[in-house]
Image 1 (cartoon, rainbow, N blue to C red):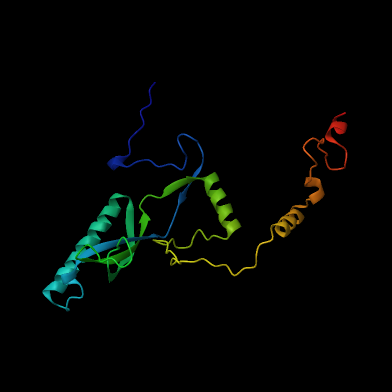
Image 2: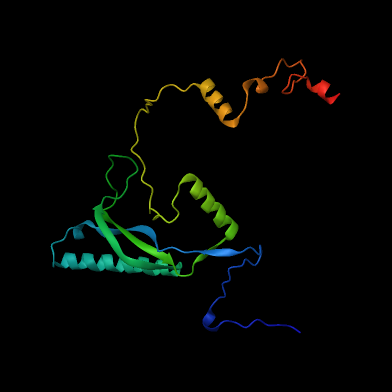
Length: 208
């Protein structure tokens, strides 16, 4: 007898916490929302337009249409917006080198909004526990908000270090003490001499 699985109504897909291949238990990754960032190009003639003017109305309509287009595009990728997006600007577009003039007549307005997955992603339970153990070990908060971008420090022409010079011998001795090792047990003689194990007897005598 052949069993035909019954399809779910409305084109829905069955999602189970078990993997079909590895047969490993999976857990959902739940979040209150991740911060996503984008930008909107606005012509310079619309930047800082007087209130209630035609340029201001055109600016508001342009930003609103671009925001809705971004939200619709994220929805196709499985994300839904949480809260109200924030728009800041205007800013000059990035250039290849410092001091160069932008090659466009537009200004950028940065948009930040929180999105969360419509259907949660799943991860193997063993992988999740390993990531959690590493976060506890290194003091990382997995529930902290994720930044949309990583700020880079300013570049400097010369890197100076005010710390005292590093003594490798002292550092090695401190490490041996932490591990409970003795320096004499790690020393070997000349290449043509038989290797001596801790205790003083050569390796050949111990095998005999």
